[in-house]
Image (cartoon, rainbow, N blue to C red; front, side, top):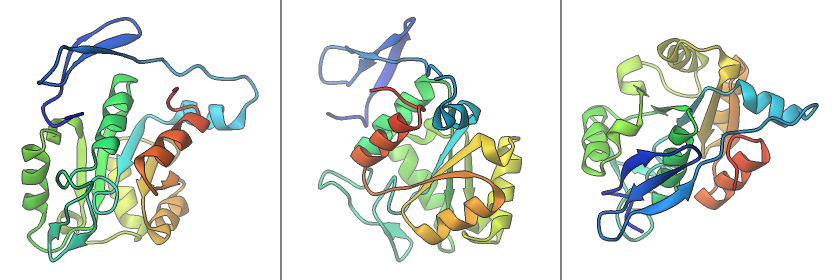
Length: 196
C-alpha cells in the first residue's frame, strides 16, 4: 500500500475512511482503548498522552553523513511505522519526534518529512541540532517533555538503541525498544495503547 499520498477522508464513530490515492477509499477500524481493571500495563497505558519516535532506525533507515538510508526498498520512510502513527493519531495520541541530528541536517529532516507527506503528523519535533544536546542526555528528554507540556509518565518514547531508551527512562518516560513495525504494533497492543 502507498501511504505517501494517503489522506483521512472522514472520521466515523469507531472507524474512518482512508484514501490511498490509487484505489477506492477503504474503511479501517479505530478502536478507543478500553482499560482493564487491575491490569498494570493497561493502567500505565491509560496515562500515555504522547508517543514520540526516533528518526534514524525507526521512522527512516540509519543516519549516514547527515542523510538517511533507503529503507524497505521503496524509499526511505518506514511505511509500517507511518501506518502505526496514523492509527495512534486517530486514537487521540499526540505524536512527536526526538532525534539526534548531524549539523545542518534538521532542515533536511523536515524537508524529507514534507516530501513523504508526513510532516503534518508530528506535533513536536525536537532535534539535538536545535537543543545543543544529544540523546541519551536527560536534558533533551526534559526539553521534549516541556515542549509537550506533559509529565514524563505521560510520554512513550520509541527508539532502536538501548542507550537512548536508558536516557529516557532516567527521567521517568515510558519506552519501547524498536525492532520493526510488526513488533512495535504487537507491543503497543500488549500494553493497551492500540487494539488489533
